[in-house]
Length: 258
Image (cartoon, rainbow, N blue to C red; front, side):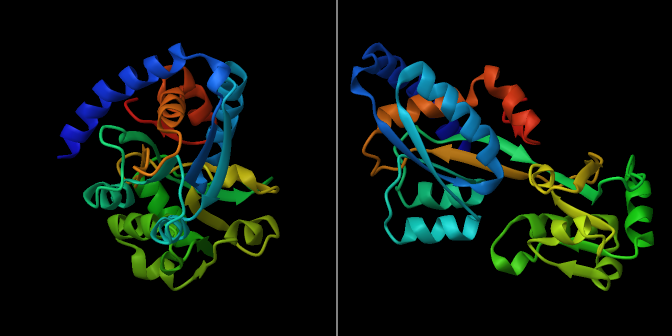
């Protein structure tokens, strides 16, 4: 079914976008986007370019996956939603999406964070990462029970490395754990690659090596209740075009299909 949805998107989205762009900027729209916070940097930058090019304005509401689902469940209306694949799948099955509008957008992996100025640990291969985490005096990552997916990804990573219990015994589970690293209170952090550059005093030592990496995949779609579906589809096309790849990569995410 997922393949069918994405195949339909490849046919429907270009057609609707072509018709919309042909109408010109005289019908400038306000596009309201509800998005996972992990994607905010590239989305904001690309929205500015999109507005300059088309005249259509884009406003954002960012939040954790749990907060986003609460807004959708409460009946709040948006023109485009960017959510983890499983959450979009739920909306799709409930017929809450414009048929043919759903598509894979991007993914983000886990990175290792350290204090600026500290030696970068060896995380070049899974065995080196495993040793680094076992040797670390303290580690921080997000609590999966708070609704964010970063902590859940870290738990999967630690299980793959076979060190879940050893790390958990010395871990500090905090969504603001990077601040603890910046203050020198914690040695190493495990967070989404896209989140690490946002905190002053913290740097990305590097992403988790690919054999052990755990990704969060994000899909995007236009809700069936959108007031500006054509404009939203045009913006989605703009976000996912190959020319946008550099923006996503600069923010620590990978554009789908790359």
